[in-house]
Amino acid sequence: MTEVAKWAYDLERANTAGIHAAYETALAEKDYPAQVLLHWFISEQVEEEAWSDKLLVKTREATCAGALLNLDRHLSKILKGGAGES
Image 1: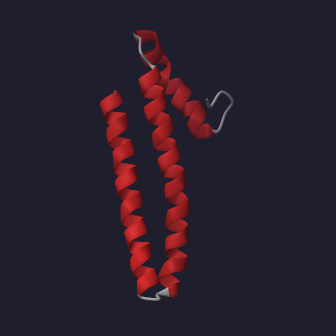
Image 2: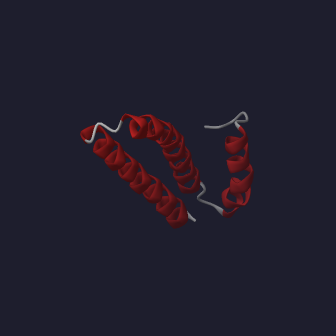
């Protein structure tokens, strides 16, 4: 399970790098509409990286069968913004 969470986190980091590269190009080309559009992607990506980091932390903390069994419930609470996000 940890390998899957790590893969998801690495994928989000790669997405971030791609978005940043696109933004750098938009800056260099003085493409102002693209810069505005990319701001939305940058904001979204901050959330995606935070979520994938939480997923990785939670899977690393789930070190026994009982914890793995309850992992789904904890992740669902996080996604819904419920109490006990830590």
